[in-house]
Length: 310
Image (cartoon, rainbow, N blue to C red):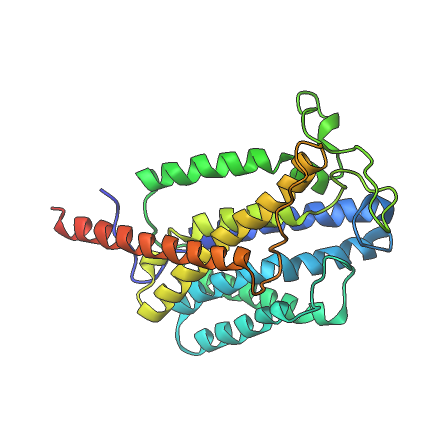
């Protein structure tokens, strides 16, 4: 039988999320600092300054999106005046939604990128405050059937992400023994990118999608512990949307790089990175609503079983 929740949500999944994105940020800093900009996509500059700039953009997208979900958990955990601080930090993070703050066509850092990054920093500080005040706290014990689904799904997603994971550390995956079946270092020029490879070195939005999906699966374990119903409902839908959106942009990037560029198909999946009025985004929203509704049903069933257990 699963142990009961603490009166407020635990921080295990929140801390795991910070560690995941911290590790990726370090890889980005090192790779963009040591390699020339010609190896990357739509960046300029060299050295540590270039690496730090790319990390700043990473803190905007996707980390600011994730921080909004973390701040909901922290607001429930801290409450009072610090919950107001969490709301303010979420507003700062939400600046990333404004058109032009992060653009695929220009991934150099801009002054406005400091605003969502500040929201991320506040979220990190609030995590430390929550940890100091109440420790990690109790959480749903690991090992249930849905955790098995989460682990299997995570393994599959990480296998798909191998080309991007290696690119993040500055290595073409096809040059790794046993992984030559992936497209990676083949030169496939595009307008304005005469030396562009099939999978350029550096960070990819496909990996952002994988990270968002992994984060959503982790935070879905926290949603039932949210005692404030509006926060629970909002976080539940946001996590569902994060999962579907992450899978969508990862699929689009993988499809382009591993199938279209290989010549397997000429059919392209439309870009879904930026929200817009389209059938693709309508499908994302509908899928998110369905997952959210199903998760709420499962959560109510689990709760009734726990209350009826001896």
